[in-house]
Amino acid sequence: MAAFDKESGHMSIQQAHGDVLHLNVGGTLTTVLRRTLISVEGSMLASRFSGRWDDSLEKDRDGHFFIDQPIELFLPMVNYLRAKASETPLAPPVTSPEFESETQRRNFVRMVEYFGMTPGIFPTQIEMCRGEPETAEISGHPNLGVATREWTTFTLGTRGHNRPIKSFSVILGNVERAQIGWVRSGHFVRLLRSGDHKGVGEEKYSFGLDCCRGGLLYEGAFTKLEGLLTGNGSVIKCENKGERWLVNGHVVASSIALDETFHLPPDLQQHNLIPAFSGKGDWKICEVELDLSDKSSKSHAPPR
Image (cartoon, rainbow, N blue to C red):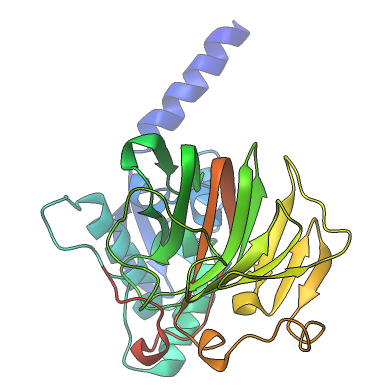
C-alpha cells in the first residue's frame, strides 16, 4: 500500500507538470503552464510550483496563486522561459530580457536572483577552444562541468546576454595538470584549435593558477606559491577576474599581496576577460557570479 501511495504521488506530480496555472502577479491576472515555471531545475520558483506545495502557497480571494512582484518584471522572465522551451538549433538563440530603464533592469536582476533563476535567465556555457572534440564530454546546467580523456582547454562564456562573469569556482575531480584562470577573449579565444597547445597561463593573453606546480602563471612566467596543495575534491575560487584566489575557502593569492612579484598588465584587469581552464580529467563549475553590468562596452563576449 505504501508503495502504491508513493507511486500515486509521483504520478500526480508528473501530471501536474502540464497544469495551466492561474496567477495574480502584483494585481494582474495571467496564466502559465506549470512546466514553464519549473523549467530551471534547482531554482526556488521550480520548488515553489512543483505541485507539492500548492495548498500552502499564497492565493488571492479567487484562488489564483499570488506572486508579489511587478508584472512588468515577472512577465518578461516567463516569456523568456516560453521562448527557451520552443528554441530549435536552426532558429536564432533566445536572448535574455532587456530594459530601457537602468533601474528596471537592476530590479529585474534582483528578482531573478531572488527566485534562484540566474542560471536559466542569464545562462553560462562551457566551450572547448583547444583540443579534440571527440575526447571530451561537456555538461550544461544544472551540472555544469566537463570530462576529457586528453589534455584540453575550455572557456566559460555566456549565451544570449552581455553580463560578464566576474567570479567562478571549480571543483576538481581526478584532473591532471589543472590550470585555471582567465584569458583575453578578443585575442586568446579563436576558432577551435586541435593538436598540441599550451594551457591557461602559458599561452599569450592568459593567466591562471597552476595546480600541478603550485603557483601562478602569466603568459608562461611562473610565480611559486608556498604551501599551495590541491587534489581530488579541492574547490578553487577565482574572484573578481583574478584579483583573489581561494582554495577550499582559504586565500592563496591576491593582486595586492602579489603586486611586487605578480603584477598583471592593465589590459588584463579590464572587462574583456573570460574564465578558462586546462587539464585532463573531470571537474565541475559552480558559484558563477555575473557582473551587474550588461553594457556591451564592458562585455567579454557578444551574445550568441
